[in-house]
Image (cartoon, rainbow, N blue to C red; front, side):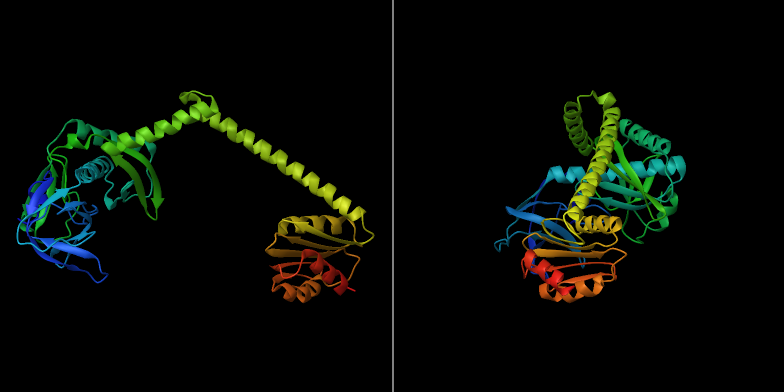
Length: 394
């Protein structure tokens, strides 16, 4: 453990080390192994550190077969001298805040309601814990958040301690440890005792704040999304910017924003309903006009009409005139859409007619004897295709 400087002091930002090994993994990624390192490797729900090694970017850190591999953008010149290394402190401290915040919030839910944390994920944007409960109320979430922030305000010290498996019985652990040797406890006295290999600040006050953002059911658990530390400030700024823009767009103060949005949605619903009614009326007029210009066969070419629109027009015409026969073709320059329909008084087989014409455009379709449709490539013009289907029915 002496070579793992992040355990000795998580606040180390620069250090020097000697290269023990340099190579490539099975995927061809360049890595270097040092005699000591402050770079934290991926583990325990915490992402890896980034930074610089000999002015080369560290893009990943993983522990593989007992060695910590620092993956670099390029190789380091061979040298026996110590090289300079620097941690991306902003990223590291963010991880320390989030990880300690997770301990505090998980312990708060455990203390108040007995809800155990059974999952934890720390991403670059989102932080989540999975609670062993199928329901969570707003009141419970608020109480847990309040307790967590009270622990932060009290600025309690955060201790780390290496113990043996036999010594674990001396501590009231929040959950059982998975490892049996090299056991590391992270302790907030009189509040939380938990086995963890991550990096944490020296006191709860450095977590700054915890804010629960949302939660949802995940199978038989509740997944909580939350933020800690500087992420709270960042998210507050983002939300405030959006809210400020909305107040100007909706011409309403923040406190009346919900009412303004509800009014907007209600107006949109009414407008959508009115638009749908107008479209329906237009379809009816169009169908009557098409039917009125023909004795019994209605055949027409359209541009950029959807198959649904063609079907609707065709159904309107044949439902009003049982002697009508309808053929519609629409083209968008790349594909052709074809609809055939007949009234109840006619006996043409639409499915048969459409299936016979579709091979001409490498198309596919379906339907029944009274109504069928299909589509294919624009191998012919829409006019040519319509002429062929009309002539074929004769």
